[in-house]
Image 1 (cartoon, rainbow, N blue to C red):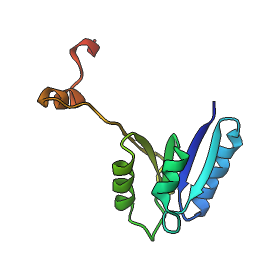
Image 2 (image 1 turned 60 degrees about the horizontal axis):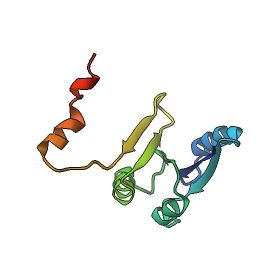
Image 3 (image 1 turned 135 degrees about the vertical axis):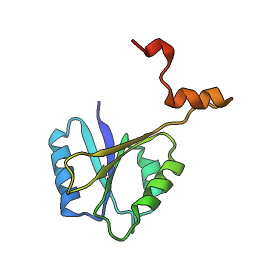
Image 4 (image 1 turned 90 degrees about the vertical axis):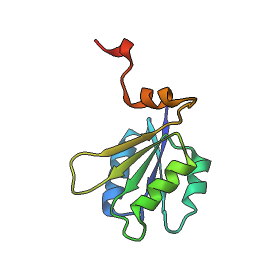
Length: 118
């Protein structure tokens, strides 16, 4: 099974390198670049429906906070990966919708369930 991934970037060398490495697994991954400044990136992502969106932290023309907020609002169930050239670890943000009836539903989000404790 193949996954679509989007890279939000103005084609920095770092993002190009990440895409190149991903494309070494062409049987598993389709990669598309989306320029968050020039492209209507929310529409392109909605059209493409990628499993993951990579955000290039080197984008200087866009504010990453705006990108994150817009992506999280437009796509409540999304996985975002923030790419940084100067850090070894990746920041992965996974968003999902959660049913809400009462405060216990909120507590269940941050408290482990009693049945899962060992």
